Length: 635
Image (cartoon, rainbow, N blue to C red; front, side, top):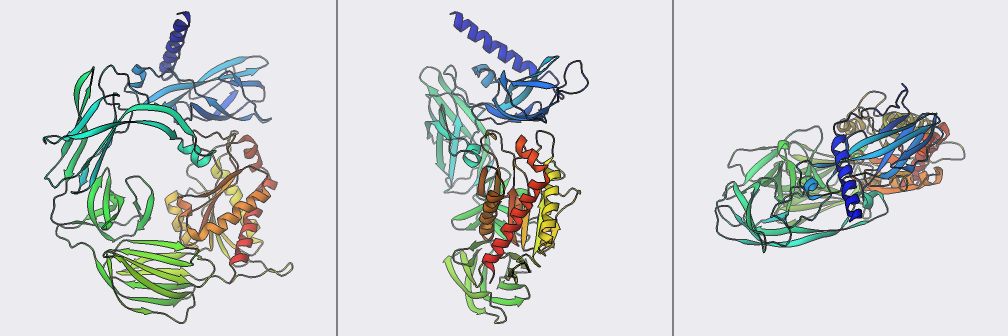
């Protein structure tokens, strides 16, 4: 009984402290009685929303010279001679009682207790943070819907007959349930499932692999409906749950369902934007293809703030609503025949010109192993009688086509060179033009003379600015050190005869403007230089070091070589080689990679970044990787 009282009292105190934290200003952690701060916390900021793993999160910062000991949550923290520290600690959180879990506040209020000890004082600070509420099985005392779980559907939908509507929500467990469309009589059963063995995404990507949460959450209800051919407009979903002891209760979902019963397709046209419009696999899901201004497509559904565009009879992508405009009702669905394909020598490029009668969506892929480019054009029908080969070029050896289905045409372009150096693709009026780069003339090194880098054009992109990027425990900003590394690398490459350009100096350059800046130099390579920090939920003390990222297939081999050179040059852990959908890697016009030589949030690695010898090691790793790659792909 005594233990129960103590446990309840402790839970009450933690909860009370947590609630009071939001009333205190922690904007600066200053030592009492002195003007100079004894500790600076770089991350997390007071009341920052963080996503821990198993309740743990990182803290980094620095302490002043007179600090003898630092404790976080009563655990001793080691710090470097300059006072820098990085620590991975459990957040102090209130017990997740039903009242706290069901409260309207979206986040839990937690904190770290920080003690700074000098010869003269011992100061204690509380650093408040906010975390998402972990899911919890509801008590069986009343029938309710759990608002901490994402209801599906949660947005207004426009669906077609025959589509499947998925329903998923969390509620009081051990209920029998069904759903119906408000105003209709048909009932559709719900099945109760549970969530267990979910993996932590951050740990799977940047940590040791698939680490599973062993929590088991009950009360997950799922159902589905094949949309009928009915004239439903703004219909709401009604959920009915019945419990053996708690009775029966009905709920209306906020989303509205409309069935598209139009006898004509709605047609949209893609609007002009700074970059190509992204076609996604689902609302806010992965990238699939890119759409230039003027492309027309059938819109056959809406979800959230996205339009679903039909590519073919069984394929679709989602684009933001504000990226397209609806054409007048009655507009013909986009479709075009293709009669002729031409190749044409154009100096450093070879043009492939495909004659369409209107702008259609396309999907382009480079197949490195087969040394070809695959170009799928949707809603295109072959009437191809002519393929013209310009014999002034020897880059393209073959062009063939196949009608995959009635509304999808694939054109395969066989290349006669070791590597694809990049391509430009866009519409010129209604002619789809693919410009493929020819291999450059790469010099051989003879003894101490000549270099494969001589005459090659390279763009170095110092990541970040206007934003700071990551910040090291001593306060070193990523945007600043990225520029330092870029300038040193520029010097090293120029000594080899390369033409090197930077996307920025000290001037701010928004991320979405950087691709255009890179392309303006028509480079052979684009290398974006960053320094890393892990997302919440990954332990940077265990997982850190150098890493390399690529997206387009033509950059894969160079990324592998660069990763190996960093491994040889830098005495740091290997954080990995990644295919990643990063903006600065999605530049098909060149060979584009992104490199993260260190973890700037790691005290030792932040210190290395300030060292000229280490900076030269990074620059020389990039230089050596470029030379080896150029030697491999020399024709």
